Length: 354
Image (cartoon, rainbow, N blue to C red; front, side, top):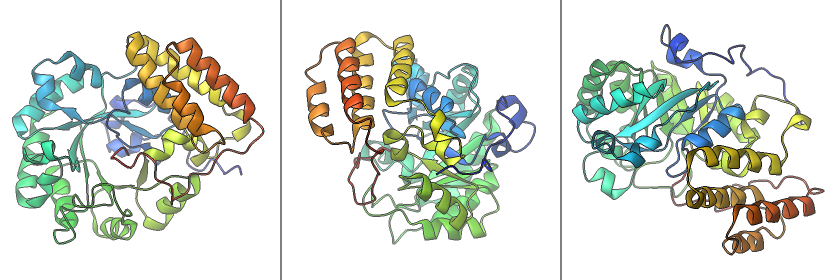
């Protein structure tokens, strides 16, 4: 079903420079954004989603200390593709304000639009250092922490957080207020507590409640798998934008669908796979290109008959040409079938991506 282009803005070439003159969120192409995902939202995937119409792009979680130690791998994680039509943010984590302030200089140099602070990561090695979700346990300290960072960096500052440490520590309202007071541009909320990890359901009722009380733009995140969900949650919750993670892995066209572009003009699965390969080859060696390509191909076939067998066979294919040829054969075989629906009951990438 084609939807009206009510979300399309005439600012396809708006870059960070323009957004810095007003509110950062005014520079977003549309309210359907790519969520940061560890090991996934690197420069190649971000550029692909930029071409697919995502409203804002956020990097995978990046260690501020890794940047300061001049780790080549970490610096590669903050690379920004040229001529982006979407705002690109780099998500940092670190236990000290000084580390993040110093790392932000590197982020500015690569041409990012904003710095995003992670207050949601539940992983033990992150929270035990006082980073990620641990920062939500003390909203007063969080305000001081963010205020110092805001004053020390030149780029706009945003945050992504959970609803709290646990159901007994739902500090989301206080932490949103801390973000507002410190000068952040928006707060993205993953509707789960740290204790939940990635289990259970995202609490969109609480996200809507936060939006009603907040004096800062709110972005909702969690469990968006389909276009209908994205549009309905955006409307029902009243948030300023929604972030889509896992839904974009199985359906990279989801952003185009959300803004109502004609599905007849969409690229085929093979064309998307070919484009992703082109981007990977420009960034990675043969080994890493093959690893990323296998993952992406496995997401694209998910839900089709024979998908499990295809995924298994991929790891016996040792060259890119073999993988691409196998994918072409697969998609030709299922071309007459409708695109699989991503059901809420399905377990997919449940270990923490998106």
